[in-house]
Length: 235
Ligand code: C5P
Image 1 (cartoon, helix red, strand yellow):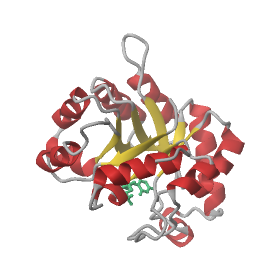
Image 2: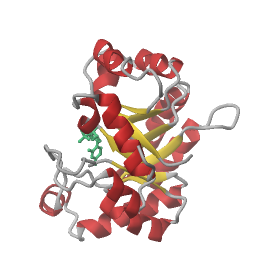
Image 3: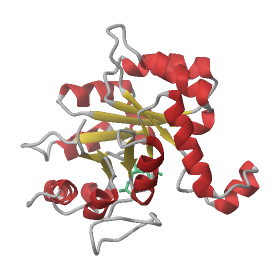
Image 4: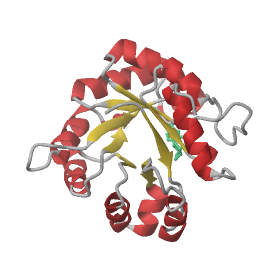
């Protein structure tokens, strides 16, 4: 899989997501379906978006006992998504079980990536709520290494961490990076933001872009701008 822009389709209904996707008459963007849309519209929304020809990152961040995650992943693999995720905090046995569950009868499987520490967790909350006293950067890199050891394909991380993850886990270990804004755009609730061009320089494999595209006056133009900046091509 080459580098690409993944649009976070954070919509609350099928009608809204199709109104948005109908704007794209020439290209079929890689889309991310998260908990909001999946819980609102159910697995059928995944089948329908797939049937329209989009690649899909199903971002449901599973975290449960290995057997439960294995069975849930087996169900998700039948939805024919390209990429899905879980929490590395579920530990190596859970991640290995997830991989087993994802493998389809023909031997193929969606790619599987791990969330390390959520960006909403900082050093203070990690220490107070999780009783983890090591520096958060060390924890993130340790979780990435455990995901790699379990056989996963990569991690969700900040573009600012992409280089470190590649250095520790290998150039092929994927870095999928949210927190992207155009130069001069509003950061909103994201704390550490990076432009698409900067994410490319930092080594991100996939950028996940939500509101900079979905809330733009011209979402198709914003998507094309993201692609050209991230892939380093002239628009
Ligand atoms: O609108 P925005 O570009 O901030 O959307 C980013 C997307 O990436 C959202 O769907 C958000 O849930 C997701 N995400 C994130 N930070 C993480 C993990 C996922 O922003 N650490």
